[in-house]
Length: 306
Ligand code: PGA
Image (cartoon, rainbow, N blue to C red; front, side):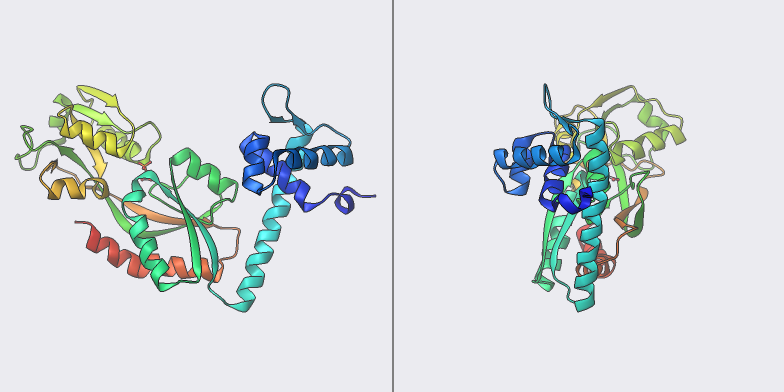
């Protein structure tokens, strides 16, 4: 008998969850099952296939056979998700749960937008996660996110990009910094400064590197500190200056704890984008969120930023 006639969706979900989490315990949590139940599903699957699929000797890893099966199992599960979307669309109801992922810097505004969207569409539920670039990429690739909000889109994925608001980035310093009151500071003046950087790969960091390259600047010193919050605290502590998204420092500038430096050619203006899968139909719920972000969402962004 053919494999497709014997295996079950439960077994496929189990092996995909084990592949995603590299752990039977985590997979069980994800599937709301017990750990022995997940092990049992994998054992049954292995006996149906007649090959070892998960190598659990030291760490949990798929065998070559496991990789093949998981790749096809993902396709099958995605096909069923698409079917669900199509069926719901036939009813034309904007309801269901949206999985939204936002890049770290977007956490300063996405909750405000989703709160308003939620008030207008009480039947649409959403789960919001805020992740770094690698995780956003992984969630989109594994189709575990319906929609992503980020600046620079990830490469190598079939995504539809919808720009919805300009993204401004500038240099900030402590109010007692010698450049704080200067006007039209030439970018070359940054060469004498100590720059505090976001982690490698962050959109903010990439934009800064592009700016420095374009102006031929090598800063005096550059320290990598990580998150937006750490950078702001370090700037306030007098460690140096930082290049950040306006969303991250609006409150500190307003309260006088940070100053936006008037460096020529800044703010750097990029775009905030909504990304959806190009190969998946839009549910009415997703369509409602896209419409909201492009219209009222953009108006809210204007009211929240400078
Ligand atoms: P970041 O992303 O939080 O990684 O800097 C911002 C962006 O995507 O532009």
